[in-house]
Length: 387
Ligand code: PLP
Image (cartoon, rainbow, N blue to C red; front, side, top):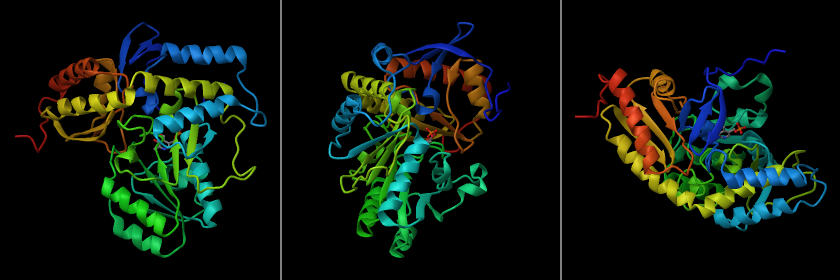
């Protein structure tokens, strides 16, 4: 049987990984500064994580959501404490798109409305409602376009205000930091204004923290730089460090009803064990503060490169803008220097999303490799803003 061919693949086959390193079938070591799309938060194969999942599998791996599962409560308790949002309610699902799908549904249940305000360059996943609020017509099938969506410009509040005034909005959805869109950070003043307008017009504000959450930005959630209280927060990627798990944090003003949301696999025993292990390590190894600290150092080093036009982002969610398309640079990093990095929908932006447990040593190692590739192949490219 052939695989349905939707992913362009690099011809590399990882078979083992540890910390921020991946090893292919020939034993070649790769530095992972992409975390498999921002997924690896605590590092690959952390011993505590491996032991927690393996230990759980020997007890019970799965049963349905019709029985008591103490692990879900343990996860909720730890998450409430570490995120400093103990009053929110937790609902567990399996992926980022599913979390956004459920969040949009909750907002629509509450308001009885359908129009959603989202933002240009935003990405929220590929399920039906999530892809409809994503700024990419190429991945929307006709069946997905079944409710009205307005795409507004990030950091411009006036048009959003005008739209909210009409009283027909079901939800506003925004990424804590736009990831695939090229690492664009909403201004704290913009998020504050958005939150206050959503409060005024009683429109649920959904913060998509699927990529920017779980410590990646140097705070548990990126929106916490703006000190707001969203109505719903969605999470996935870093939450399970590779084990499929997603979730929603739901403000106490939302009342649950039996059957309102549900998934067969959401919150299963193995996923909870993985999620608990991730929170244990984030806390024990102080990885959120570490991400903030390492991020400052990393940004300073990147800004010193003459080819770099701009460094965007927070913590260890960084976008490096060059004056040239980064595709050849990214390929040279992988094949010549054995380093994984990411791209974005902006052709000139290199996306860096390393595991949160890296330090200065790993940043220096990466910078040496990046500088080597730039010197070899891109020496003539100088940022227009450089002297
Ligand atoms: N939201 C954001 C901000 C994302 O970056 C992604 C995935 O890249 C998603 C949602 C969708 O997550 P998933 O691929 O787990 O469905």
